[in-house]
Length: 339
Image (cartoon, rainbow, N blue to C red; front, side):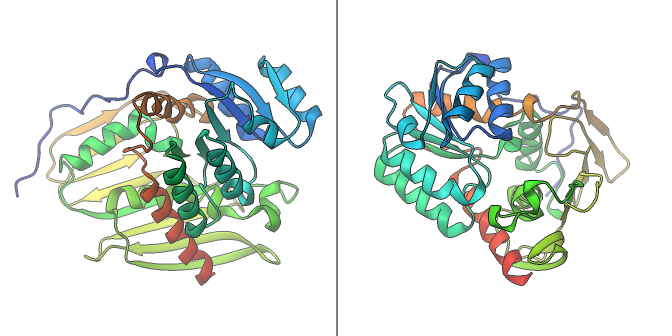
């Protein structure tokens, strides 16, 4: 099959987040990522964050005061019982995601769960079943996949511009001191679910079906993994080489290489930023340029997509469907077992 030759990169099809229908959001858990989420929504969308719920009323009140929210609830149940909330953003600790999401769905709320969707694939399947029973939207806030940059990458992959993909190389390492919650095994500490989710999700986005996983880890403390490398393969033997660590800062870049061309995604590959498409026959070199950004510059895209889908009566995203979140966690489960 002849290679697809481009003179220019595709244009991102991502709708303007400011044009998304407005929903009333409640935030469950006023932690660090909840601050970044509300900051992003208020800066880049018309979405209304109307309430926050915490098991500590003082924390809820402080969060509401900082972001100008009209309601602060001193329990999770109070937030879920709030008739003025359309959709709940689950921002609690990883081990709580499954139960919090199911409780929200059972309360009749739509749900966007901060990644990971659950601790494991079984928990993610439980959430999917609860969403089906409630006929409500549920999604994992794998915000990277909703960025305009990744829509362009998806068009290149779908259009066969790279040819058959042979190799994915992706890295996400960040140094943390032992006093950080990522060192707490009770909170699912270690790099796998916090940082490693991004490389695994990228590999799944490219290959869809991964049939082999070989992993090796290095401990950071007793009972806690600090560094992981994994080799994944599909049925044809095409490979993804992934790395994640909390022991050091690493380049956090990624490569997607096919028969005809290679994408070099600048680090951090999972944030707003740039990439280069290089043809192997000495032909065109095309550069996608985007100012480097942070999570605050990107978390709102998944929320805007959820608002569009819910308003249209849909209960799942095609950009990041539940089956993708479950498949990512299946790989993480296998890595965890091997470690």
